[in-house]
Length: 242
Image (cartoon, rainbow, N blue to C red; front, side, top):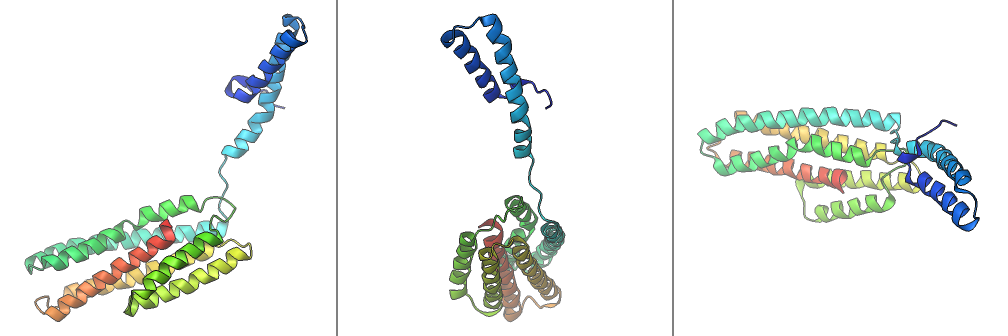
């Protein structure tokens, strides 16, 4: 057993102190005998405690499959955030020139939410750390309740996307109930949402560059796409932050 300084381990010092006090006060033994004995007890105790403390402090590693999927998510999120920032800058110029300030505000808000995604992925990564699945059945069911509430108030592409997400959550719940690691399935659901968000963002850019923004119908189409992108980010929040 490796010798360890007991001063770094309060429990070891306590054990040595108890031996010293018990030997001198209760057993009436000579303090010259008890002092080295208590130091020995503290040193041995520290040697026992130290490896356990080291194990507790060492973070558990994610499985290779989860780690790989998380890396893919980081890459997707960073690319999407960069594209959102680029679109925001482009919209600032084009919509300011056409005096479409309300539409600009809607689009900027959707892009701002999208640029937050990389940080949200990092927040989720902390929650997914360790070998044991951090996703309990209760947590997944809570996510489903939130999604189903959104479903009742949605329509069109957002509703379709929510239905797919609800189905994914059902599969994840089944995995968790079987005692399997639901984290990889959850990350795959996120990856799908990010890919769909990228599609909406591209459609927004196409519409911004080609539409006659003086036409009310074409401006409305761009606003609808901005709202759809915002909705996708809110749905991502359910998986990432809940």
